[in-house]
Image (cartoon, rainbow, N blue to C red):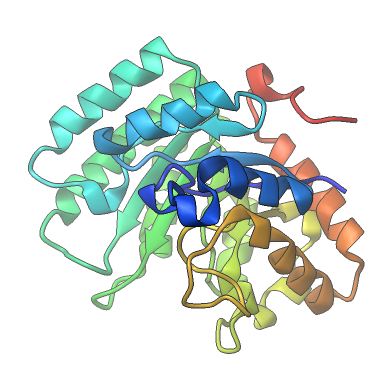
Length: 272
C-alpha cells in the first residue's frame, strides 16, 4: 500500500519537539503507516526556510509548494507575491499553494485576497503546475463558490489542482470535478457532524486525494490534538467505510489521483 499526504504543514515548529522525537521521528511514524510522500504547502515568506530545509533533507518524500496563503494576505501582499515569484523562478516546486480565499477570520483584505489569488492562478497556468486551494467560508460568503466563479471566469487552459480541505455539498463536489480538480479529503471526514458522509459515498475515488493538513484538523480519535501525517490512514479507512470498499482500493485510487497532478520532475519518486 502506498499513501500520499497531499497537504501537511510538517515544517511547523510543533513538529520540532524533541519530546516526541522531532521531525525525523514524525516522518518515521508516517513511513510505518505507509505514507510515502508528503506535500508541503507554503504560507508566506516566513515559512519558506523551514519548508525548504525539509525538502532538501528528504527530497524524495517531502515535496514543497510555493504560494501565499490567503490568511497571510495583508497590506504587504505585493511584496510577499514578489518574493514567492522569485522563489518559483529559482527553484522547482511541485505546485502553487497554498492559495485561495479565506472569509472566516478577517474580511479586511478580501479585495487583496482576490488579486493575490488571480495572480497565483496565472502563475500556475503559465508554469503548468497544479494549485492547492484554500477556500474557507464565513461572514455569509461561500469561499468555494467565489473561488470556482473566478476560476471559471479566468478559464486558464489546463489549470488543475486540489480543493484542499473540501467540506462542501455534493453539488459543489461535482462542480469542482467538472472543472478538472480533485477534492482534498482530510480529518473532517471522520467528524460526526462533518457532513462528508452525505458526499463521499456518491463521488468516485478517482476524484479524491488524501490529506491531513497537519498539524491541524486531526481525525477522530485524535480530534483536538496535534495532527500528523501518520494519521492519514485513519482518513483512508473512513473513506473506505463510507464507500464500502477496501482501504487498499482507497489507497490505490487516491494515490493514482495524486500522482496524476504531479509535474514530470516529481512523477517518478514512488516505489513500484
